[in-house]
Length: 355
Image 1: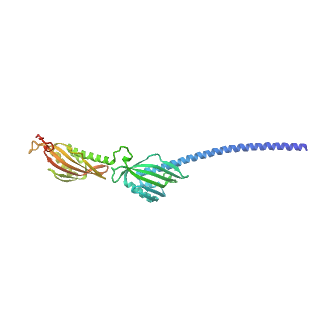
Image 2: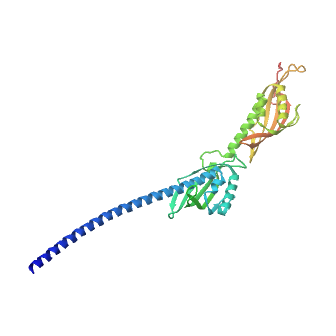
Image 3: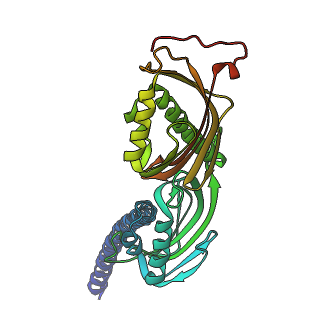
């Protein structure tokens, strides 16, 4: 009986030892697996963060591609960035309204591209990207578009746009995202509002027209008909009032012949504008006018071997048209009245010379 008790005690001890060993192994394994699980969870969290970063970068790339497609003015590229049932809310300007579906949206962007012949852009500050859920992101930014109107390309200005894009991750979309919602809030402003000290486009255009007018009058004094004629458009008209060349001349051939006759009459020509010329600009049409005085020294002829210098009082009006990036002369009214130099310089007697 005693030996049986001892055996049972030994067995009990063995069982306790075995249980303790298994418990130790269990807790060790549990700790190991817990550590591995924590590592896996950390890895998953890291991958999730990386994925979120990639998705945010993708949404940002899609937004900036959208703005650049607008600058390219390719409505096909612009339209393919939208989801089929997208909504564009346009706030401000002539295109204000709400447009639903790619057909309406492409139509409004076509109207936009027809308004402007040149478009550049940048965001005033870096865009912000907000994750709404795992597949939907919102990108917002203040964007400035520098534009040249098709109807008046010289009148450059800026479109201040507050842009908000709702983008959905979409398999098969060119950028991986489709625009589901867009709010385009636009306000046109002159360049003077965004560039400190900028003189204004109206001043720049007036200066360009004035420079063309001064060049025209100076080329007349140079007596180089090639220089004179390069200013006229092919269908230009010159109305000459007064003097031996009085008449109306149509097209560059007749105008060239007239200025050639003028140059053949005078050996030496100098000039000045009696007061600053006036310039007016309306859209793609501009007018420059001035009261001019030309002192001319005629060539001697058999009938007049010792000519005298003359004063030509000229009221000249030049009309320019903007086309293909430049201002060309389409009409000129040259009203001339010859007079002795003494009429402008009392007491002066022009000496005779052998021309």
